[in-house]
Amino acid sequence: MPNRIPPLRISAFTATTAVGAGKTALADALQAARSGLRPNDFGPSPLPTWIGRVEGVEALTLPETLASWDCRNNSLAWMGLQADGFLAAAAAARARYGADRVALVLGTSTSSIGETEGAYTRLEADGRFPPAQRRPLVHTPHSLAMFVQQALGLEGPCETISTACSSSAKAFASAERLIRLGLADAAVVGGVDTLCGSVLFGFNSLELVSREPCRPFDAQRNGISLGEAAGFALLERADGKQDTGGQLLLLGYGEASDAHHMSTPHPEGLGAERALDDALARAGLATDAIDYINMHGTASTKNDEVEAALVARRFPARTHASSTKGFTGHTLGAAGIVEAVISLLALETGWMPGTVNSSTPDADCGPQIRLQGAHGEVRHALSNSFGFGGNNCALIFGKGAAA
Image (cartoon, rainbow, N blue to C red; front, side):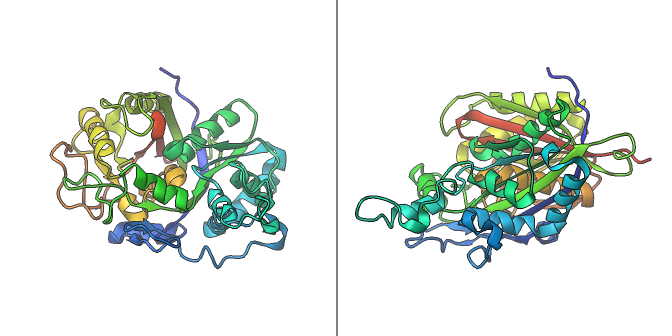
């Protein structure tokens, strides 16, 4: 088992999702049990499904200095960076540590592939992209990180993590290592993924997309609802003064790759459980210390079955667990950061969300899974992110002890 790690202070965080831009919009939706899903209106031939679409992305114009990066994914990233004063927080960290000492670690599943799809529909007679699309850096998986690095004026280590739906959860783990090893003094982490044809039709080809709003852990669940989102957090070392008085902290993380199947979780959840155990070990906690669990809970048949069994066998009945995919849709590479933000909001406000759209829990679910939200004392929160190919990540957040 890994050793306990020094906590990292989370000095700023934000998320922009289908329920709105920033933490206030997200917190309000969670407390009101208001879903952001709507009938699919994306693309020229929309699939009959429901999606979590962010309003205003198409109307956004990037600043002139960033215009060469223009694409839907980077536009959503820019929208997300402007929420909750995150741009100012990142600028303050850059001034405090130096641009070369702030790392950037972002997760994305598809990056700017939507822009590349559009370019292929407008090929010239000789097979080349039209002139406006001859922008190689935009058509790469690293486009998002390079864009955000320029937008924030950062010069430290810059990573793109693409491990499907665990991508932006794993960004926290990578950032912790960079800081602990002395390669950076602070890190901006996060993730962005936008809707595109490859996502919608790709998941539909796997027969994973529901024609209705997704119903995580419901006995009648029949598939996922796809969404899009941008989220970011700023991580810094927590010294003796900074980790007191309720500061939000990254306490632990666990990663595992069980490689059981390209798109189906291990039937016994072995990789997920290994990630959980490693996160608990790094945080120095037992399962009974966790008050809230944000479950991966995609509403696919197998994911929910395996995750529910893991939570039922490892956690006490009093633990409040829920899936928030019914609020935002499954935001793929951005799911980890969005659900980390929701977990941080639970610590900050004491509100533990319910599982919207679901009405009858599957018989395999334990008492931990709640359909209704509730107020309570939240000292520690766990966020699960499980991706295709058995890429699993668990994050544990907490509050610093009062002075």
